[in-house]
Length: 612
Ligand code: OTU
Image (tube, rainbow, N blue to C red):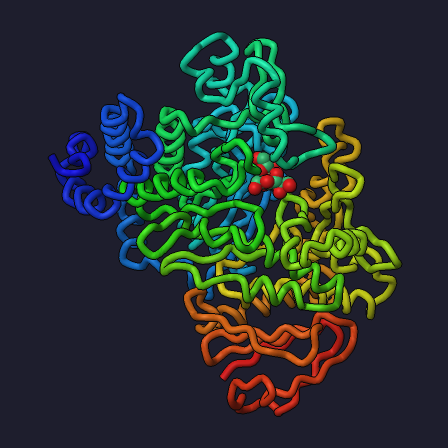
């Protein structure tokens, strides 16, 4: 017997035309898939049988993959670096806030194209829990679109329209938990013993209390603790986030098989990229924070192998908001691929921190601490998303100084006459550092700017942080509204289901008025849009900004200055202070920069991109 099972069950369901390709892909990815799954579940007497069924399910879903998506798979296979190119640009939005519904999002394609977007991340659009649902992150069904947004047919139509316009759709895939009214949770509450095993359920507080000793808290104010009592279960269920979001139990192989099938069904609708939500939390181990556990990576590697076999054009993107040192693992290693993309959360936080401190020491530590990803993988770079900015992920870069991080948080919450108009997010103990919410424009100082000069400086700060995201190396993503300088939205305070969650301050409804001014450079929205778009254009024209080109951090004389080189033909200079700076190019030791003076002057919060 060979040391891993034959692909018979995978191939059985396939038409002849697909078999050879599938067999070839299984020969490449099957051994790792089998080893990873055997590592997690091999001790179970039914493992081989379960594995065979899994192959059968993957085969059936590959057999069901539409012809246009099979063709897309083939195109992607011929050009695996397609998403690393310097022309790639992401954009992230809630479907309802951006376009009203899925069909309405399709009507925004013109705007996206004008900006240069090639990748659209739509926040959760599947059928959410009835009532409060954490902005759609409590999913009631993986196979239904939220009826308020449309239908599965609308999703297919949107995917096809976007693809026709050169835009890949990225969908959230919430695999750490399901809503308490998802069929699995409902079944468990109705007494189905098989479905009870889909969750971590404890009869009393004994185990929860043991786990709590080392667990953190994501929503300490609104949802304290990590377990919720459910009378129908006659016990406590693991709920890392809100009590209505039940963590899935990946120690149960049935959960992985169901989740993999759900993902492939969505891929077969035309979703090209999956944002894997909360990947850090997938595996629990007593005595740890239950984040970044080795088994969480094993699961992601298995999922990647499944995708590589059954929908090889599809990308996986890890959302793990964790310290710099824990990020690279989500991209895997050269022979063990994991996710194609991972959010560079500390680059994001440290860029803002550098603004607050007028000092790039932490930012430079993040850059220096970011290794080169394995081939075919890269960072998702961004300055804002729909969530809070959690400063504690920078603890190591801040040498463990809570005071230093708290000062940064205070700065963004407007302390000491700062220009920022951020809103604090729930903190746990009084001593803990609060996280920060707010639109990028509000954090950059637009809201407090009294006149044109102050607004101009706010724009420079907004461009500076975006400039880092665009030049760093990765797939940069803009957040809806930031391209028009949209401000904070306080409307959520009037909605009882949202009032407790300040993250809604940065989830505004797309501003039609600002859009109308977009092309008028004398308007504020037009000024922001024009400047950002020019940066995007500059990036697109610069081959050194392809994500696969190596980056180097250059030594600088001034802590406010970040000097980032890409290959030998790009140099980005970023002044994070209100002081003008002079940069002597020869002192950076990178040879000559023909066409530029030896000394470059940077105004307050100025940035220069040099090319040779
Ligand atoms: C993710 O977030 C989502 O982006 C949030 O919108 C959801 O509320 C959450 O999962 C539950 O689905 O820890 O790495 O600190 O940064 O909740 C996963 C708040 C997460 C978010 C945090 C985050």
